[in-house]
Image 1 (cartoon, rainbow, N blue to C red):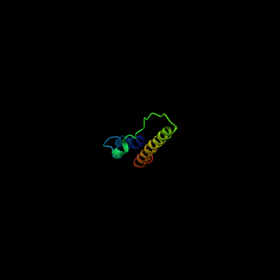
Image 2 (cartoon, rainbow, N blue to C red):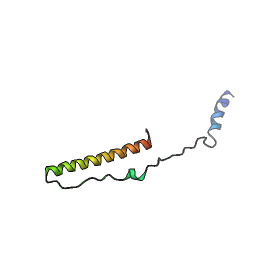
Image 3 (cartoon, helix red, strand yellow):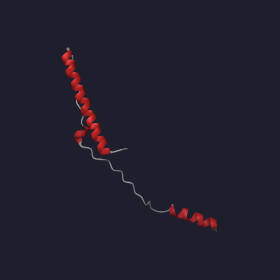
Image 4 (cartoon, rainbow, N blue to C red):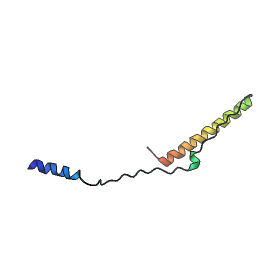
Length: 78
């Protein structure tokens, strides 16, 4: 009899609707954040053009890093 008292609550709790319903929410990320940062494909023949190309690549990297930071703020800690 004592065993039945211990087993019966376990059997009754397994039957029925789940009490918790999980809803997965995806954060809304602005479309401008998901656009590609342009990368220059200019051909270099002088040192000055190389400096300009390096500056363009730096700007592209800053653009990409800014978008990654914006997405990280929206998504939050994982």
